[in-house]
Image (tube, rainbow, N blue to C red; front, side):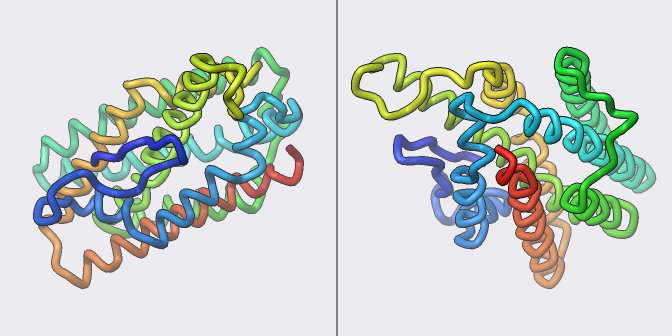
Length: 250
């Protein structure tokens, strides 16, 4: 999927020729998805994280919940990998294994946050927004196709890559003209989070999952494609709800 980061915000328009737009690109450019992505970007939690003003307790809570979610994300990859292997689709199985490894790396980062900032995971229970997202994802991973699971997982990958890149772009603009910029040049103690999701390897993983979705979706019919869009949109709604759970505490 190709997308452009504009000075005014996230871009949701595909850069490919209209006749060549992939499913993943068309979903990201979908008007309903674009509106949800814009709401995520302007969410109070995300804005406070980006400018470094987020209360530490709010970030601690978010990290604890995100660990629950990422554990389910890893499980969804594993379930899809098993389905692909059972169908003899070794290319998809291998790619899903690589994507699962990427989640493990992200979990290691969260473990570092937890250790440094005193997040005791043994005392944390999932909040409703986290539970709803996890249940949605695992149900699809267990009961539906690899394509359906990919459609439910791509929004997380694409959204976080886009947010990280956009925040980093604003920071660069600020550093270039600090006296004229209305942006913040650093996210303060949360800069590591920004750097992580703005990094090239996150974009690579997001693009890899999108390519897998496109390949798997090509094997489905029109009614199935409608289901894929429904899953994609629902995942975006759950992403926003996840941020909203912490916005009031930011």
